[in-house]
Structures are given as structure tokens and as C-alpha cells.
Length: 302
Ligand SMILES: O=C(O)CCC(=O)C(=O)O
Image (cartoon, rainbow, N blue to C red; front, top):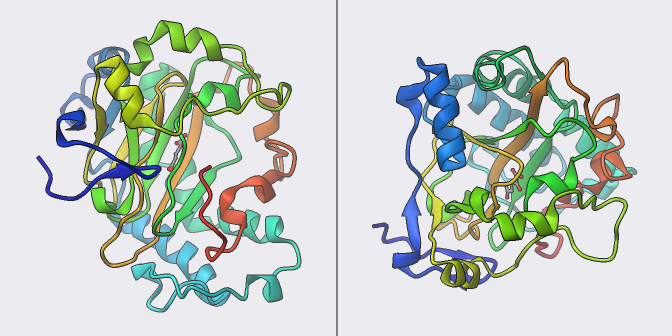
């Protein structure tokens, strides 16, 4: 059991409610076993499948843009925030700035080519098509993501869609990686409350399920799952695996950098919000992402 103090959205996680993610890397050479494990566990943790050098190049590319606008101290790879920002002086349109960061060639090389597509092809049993839109997260200390099913944000195409969560650098537990709710892909009662819900059509309720994952784990008698991630690792989940993140409590004060991308079969219908150049996403493209706001902005949840 880890000695790091773990919390999510301000809620301390008691050690008996936390468990490290199981690893599935050994199944990579056995596609049908890999697919069965995803169905059984609701996720796949694949260690070292991406080229570490390429992932670190993407990290450097993103943080160099944030060094340019005075938000991250050099050397860029360390990802230490300055606490100030000159982003607004450099970019009159913050959405446009974030779009250009999200379209960086080193980042796209990791998310839209090579090993990640090969893994997705095995899972989808056919040619894999990534969404053009990607969710790039630069989470400063204190920030975390609320707990949600991805389905409600991207359900206008095929249901057979996978999320790949990719740490862009080493992301130990202290730095706030993704956190899953054990067995939640089988919480049929909860899933039914969110199936078909479209956050862009129905504004009567929030997209997230809870801001208190600890209470939820206690009620459901399950655990919260995460691990120490390294550059090159990949975490895959389906649309109904409930997840959010740990709080970033980095002892070094580092920004947690990661991206989450979606993949489906090329021959199935695709959610039109997330394709094109640039995709409209939830209305204002990359401008709607938390990353489009300067890192100095007050902590937000999603
Ligand atoms: O990285 C995070 O904080 C959240 C990621 C997420 O929500 C997702 O991958 O769907």
C-alpha cells in the first residue's frame, strides 16, 4: 500500500478504499484475451507500449509553449508552474492558442499514429479511427477531474468507442493521475441514469456523476483504482467506466500533463462534433477545454 496521501476532489481516500490497477501488458500478444480482460475489468493498463522518447518529446513540445507564455519555468520538461501568465498578451484568442498546442506534431505523433493505433486495432478488430479532437490536460497542483462516464460527452456516433488516457511524462500517484471506480462498468442502475444523456442537448443536469468518489466507493462497497504511471504507459477504458482523477499533490509542485483520446472503428458512424479542422467539440472547440485557461486560473474541476 502506498504511503502517499491520496485525495480526490478534496476527499481523503482511506487506504482500504484504494487499490493499484492491475496490469494487462502480458496480454498484448493475445488479442482475444486482451478484449476479454477489458470486458471483465473495465480497463486495460498497458505498460511501456508507447515509445518513451516520443512521449517525452510531446511533453516537451507542450511545456515549451507554456514556457513561451510565462506559465512554466524552464527547463520545460520539469513542468513547474511560475504562478503567473502572459498568455493573454501572446494569444488574443485563448481557444486558438490551445488548439495550436493540441495540434503539435510531437503530440499528434503519439496519439494519432504508431503503437496506440495498433492497440486500438486489436481491441476494435478493424481499422481504428481516432477522433480529430483530443483532450489535453495540464493540471496544476490542487486540480482534479470530476467523476463521469465518457458516454454523455460523445454519444452521437458508434457506442464502440474507447478512451486512451496517456500520461505525458511520469505521473506518480502524488501528481494526480486518472482514478477509476472499481467494477463501475457493471453498475447497471447508475449506467441507466446516464445512457443516452447528451450534455450538449440537455442542460438540466451536470454531466458528471459525483464530486465525492470516496462516498460513492463506500456506498457501493468498491475501491478506487490508480497507479504510478510512467511515460509510455497507456490506460484504456470504455464509455461506461466511471472515472475522474486524484488531486495533484505533487511534492515538486509539478503540473500533471496527460491527454485522453478516443478511437473507434473507421467504418462506424463518428460523432460529428469531434472531427474536422478544427472540431466544434461542445460548441467552442478547444476554447471549451480547461487547458484553454491560463494555468494560474482558479482550480476548476473539469
Ligand atoms: O485526466 C483527467 O483528469 C481526466 C481524464 C478523463 O476524464 C478522461 O480520460 O475521460
